[in-house]
Amino acid sequence: MNTNQSKSESAGKLEDYEFMNGYPTAKTIQKAYDDADLNRAIMAYRFFYPTVSIYAVWKGNLDNGVVPNKIFALLDGTPEQFVLTANSDTPYSGICLDLSQGPMVLELPPGPIMSAANDLNQLHVMDIGMPGPDKGKGGKHVILPPGYKGTVPSGYYTGKSTTNRVLVLVRALPQNGDMEGARELMKSIKVYPLNKQADQTATKWVSLNKKGVEFTLVPWENNIKYWEKLAEIINDEPAYDLYRTMYAELAELGIEKGKKFMPDARMKSILEKAAKTGNAIMRVQSFADRRPERVVWKDRQWEWAVLRDKNGTFDTENYQDLYAREKWFYQAQIESPAMFNRSPGAGSLYWLGAKDKKGTYLDGSKTYKLTVPLPVPQKLFWSVTIYDNDTRSEIATDQNKAALRSLFELKDFKGTSVDLYFGPKAPAGKEKQWIKTTPGKGWFSYFRIYGPEQPAFDGSWRPGDFEEMK
Image (cartoon, rainbow, N blue to C red; front, side, top):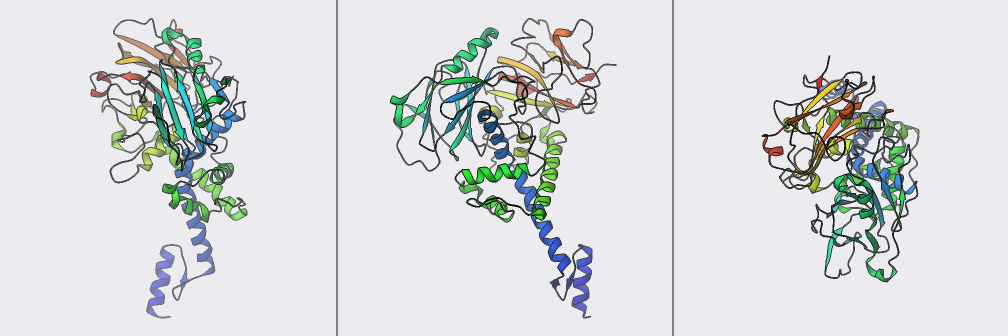
């Protein structure tokens, strides 16, 4: 055996690969391809998670009576449905649009409507209503399909999608706690084709306030169904040019536009392992974030739910921040600059609370107190909502309640602060400011402020931490 061969074999053993005269052995060939496919599958899993996640929302709507361009959803956002970090502050509407026949128009009335349109790549298309260009004054908004070359008449706010299917998430503020009035305001939105305005018909709405309705990818995220759903989207939607490199990785895994997804036993095993591994990585990044900029205040446990980015689309000067993107989309859905902007007058801000004052993860068997100084610096409202950390949906108990809200439960509280409680049993006399938790279940919280003011950003106002009550 020559010296070069000995060095090659020695190096191969160090890396658990075997080479003879510089050539791979049969064992090494198999291992190398298995490792390569697993690595690309884990990367692809994490990259396309937002796409599969919003597809679950789309499917949840259509499976329960929504018809794109014709019949739209109404949802209150309660613990009875599965929605990633939804809240109960306002009612929701889901408007599913199919642009395959051309642009669609949303005509909004004046009023306190907050809306964001995302396509099936879960990319921001446009903000509508108060956070959008109409600033709550109403107006016509047109969403253009990919590759659209036509003209748009003057007087429209315009957004362009990268897919033919678009989800418009609409919320209306319940002024003075009037939830029914907020629903009626959303139902007054008109939806019609840009090129067939004479065909405007009465928009129809269906309630999705049904127990057990699923709007998340949680049932798919750890198994082969994740890849099956991704393959459906790749085949049904036009390719997005900026994703070309990642489409190439998918092609090596058997997911390619125009081809049926038929993994053999080996590839199916690799893909299922990648789903479990990719999901575990994203869970760690969400609940054990290692970045120092996650911290809101150095003397508190609260973290930014969305790591800082400049434009609400996770783009930095030189690259797209995939870590920040993964953290957000593992917990939540919808991308919008208005949701991520950290400045007074922004649409909203979100703080993540997963640990108590001592840095220990929140435990459903324990009782905690959270002290919130009053008044909270907001122009619209604020709330604290808690979530099951397995489903990332509102915690479900026989109390059927997951939020304490300034528009409802907390509207009459005065003074310099209010104490909120979380645990299996309410402290005596504190039932109105308490959320029930489940022993043996972990949970986390979002502290939301809508219309945040300067003290929420400069640190002159800050909530306390969750403190365990003995």
